[in-house]
Image (cartoon, rainbow, N blue to C red; front, top):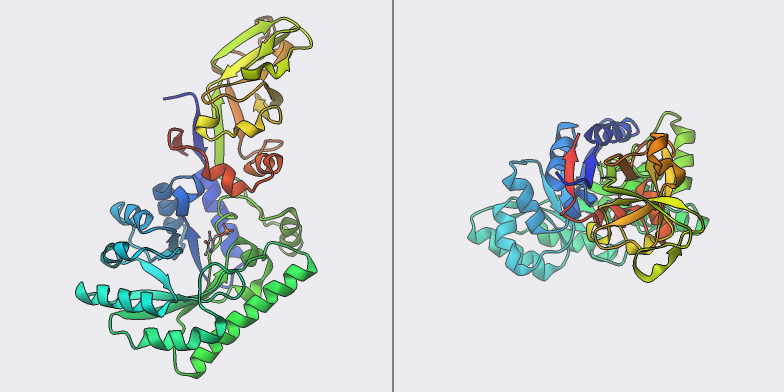
Length: 383
Ligand SMILES: *Cc1c(COP(=O)(O)O)cnc(C)c1O
């Protein structure tokens, strides 16, 4: 196997799921989003481990992702969080996937596709309470729910929405979130009043799951926290105040091994563009990982990695397949400190280790992007 790999700590995943279960009411279901290859962690293995930890639903973005799960023998309900294209509907119906619906025309088409295949399928109605992405207006939701309920080949088994700022603690954002929750709640209450069962009501991703117990309803859809990252430092503080033992562990560990060590003299340049020049005689280690593996080139000059518990800087530009680390005198073989093929951790669980959050902060992005961008050529090893 190649020296660069991603280790997926399934024990951490299971522990994160148990932590989340511990802050929910007993009957609240969990839906684990495994879209985008489970945020880069590996869709099948994450789905299996989640189901065996007692989660009720999985969610994907595309019909193809749903197909991967069904092919792997996963039988639980699977939500499709994005709107599929008409071409994909027969497959969606055959695979027994649950689409989010809200447009009358789409609902009609889906009903007739299901009818032609002699199947009745579950759908969840999506309401846009403020995300501005997909979903009907709250004031139209009862009518649309009725429209679904008269369709012979569709069963309305859930109603949902998505919160736009549930991870933020600014008072303006808290007001906005509470307004979204209230709009959602009153829409589902109005359905009940008019004799329509909204089924499973769900609206919380990670932020709502941690910070808004009143937004748990019948099911939550936490992604990021399942993979071991808090949506924000503030959300971590708040949940720890309420549940002191609540903790999350990163599931992903990005690792490589040293494939070269050499001494260089003061004035030697390293990598493309000669952006880094040794100020002293020193030692350089090379590792076979680069932006072709998903380690962003924008991290050049801004990243430290861990070898045997100690941090060392990546120097010079990160190349497509390799990058270099300044290990100083620790690289001197007489010291017996660092040798060829020693493990190098880019990020992962553990004290003083970079996590996807550290890298995201450096790059001005979010941890979702860091883990999702790890390329397929990096082997996932499940432990
Ligand atoms: C991705 C997604 C989630 C999970 O979001 P996290 O922030 O990772 O918890 C929940 N609901 C919907 C609709 C999503 O698209």
